[in-house]
Image (cartoon, rainbow, N blue to C red; front, side, top):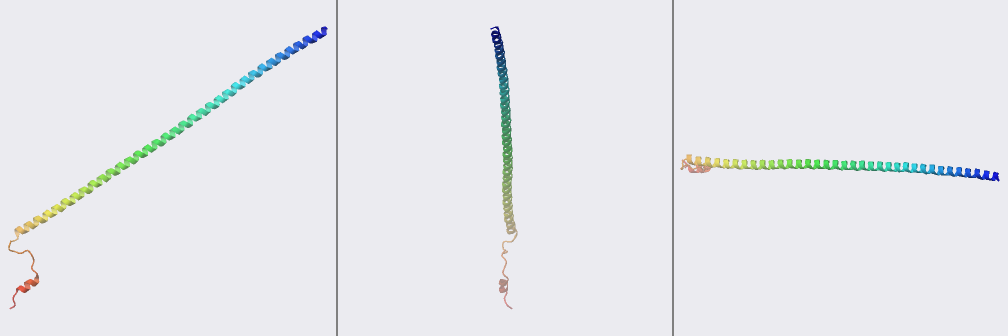
Length: 148
């Protein structure tokens, strides 16, 4: 019986050792699983952070691109307006020049008319009243002579 008790004690010790090893193995597996989960969560968080950073950069690049496009279009619009204002100013200047030329032509025509009137008045004043200013037809002169 002593042997049985001794075997029983050895089996109990062996069972206790096995139980302690099992508990230690379970604890180690739980720790490794917790470490793996922590590592995986950190990897997922890092991946999300990279995605967020990439998304922010992409959004910023798109915004910068849109801002640059708007600035370009604004400059183009301002340039077009400047060209239109310049063309309007040129057209206005041409209109003023045309009006001035027309005014000069009218003034010139008025001066010529007044000169003609003055010339006629002077001729009428200088020519004797009895002289007929209309030329005589040569045939009329011929017919006025009496034959000899």
